Amino acid sequence: MDVSIIIVNYKTCNLVQDCINSIFEKTKGVSYEVIVVDNNSNDGSVETLSLLYPKIKVISLNENIGFGKANNIGFKSSIGKFVFFLNSDTKLLNDAISILANYLANHDSVALCGGQLYDGNGNPTGSYLEYPNYYFFLSLIFKGNVLYKNLLIFPEGEVPYYISGADMMLRRTFIDKYGAFDPDFFMYYEDTELSFRVQKLGFGVHFVPSAKIIHLHDMSPKEKGPKISDLDLYVVQSRYLYLKKVKGIAVMEFFLFLHIVKSYLAISYYSIVRNDQKVKNWRMLKKILENF
Image (cartoon, rainbow, N blue to C red; front, side, top):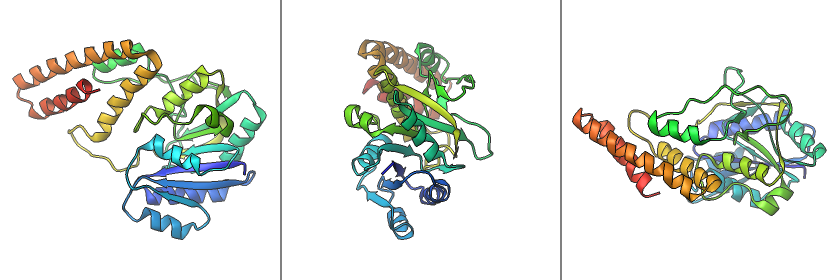
């Protein structure tokens, strides 16, 4: 088997069908298997996918264990020489899987690669992203948000960034020795940490723009409105977890301390101006930071 394609589903059954259909339609040059790991969707996804696609493997979990852990479970049931972690909200535009697999086969020093992603309107989108640095965390604390740079457009080959978790192909030999996604991350930044680890171990992380894939972005159900959602809190937790793993606990605790101080100041300010929702949000955030 050349490639094992692993897709994690959480209440995105229709999107997964579009993704699988595009795999069947576009993939011609390699042998492959498709494994869908369902994170306890409880919406009929497991039954529907099993009925529509009897040749794929559907793994049903009894709880939502997060993105990385679910992908890791899918890997344990796979047999491919290369492992392709593919988001449920993607569709192949060409034989991207064969292109990526052939690229790894012809570049022995490369352990991870990803293709060119496009949004729903056909515009190029974040195929690779900048690693969070100290300025990133200072902006997050003092400005309340982070402005992502327009990165240089790279040709095929090595990039000094991390490959989007929407489409990551790795060698099985690398995963067998060093692992895939770090299970400490529930959601977000697991792709950042994995790319960083691959590069730190001396292997290549490459961008292959000839592999073309639509990525619709964050299509799993989420809360809307002014209230901080659970997913927002996962982002905060994962950012500091990444900082701890990459820069060490002392650096993480320094930035965490600054963020906690900012939360106390924000709570005081919004209490004075009587913005109850802001007070509630900052208290939730402070609790997450203090319990990290």
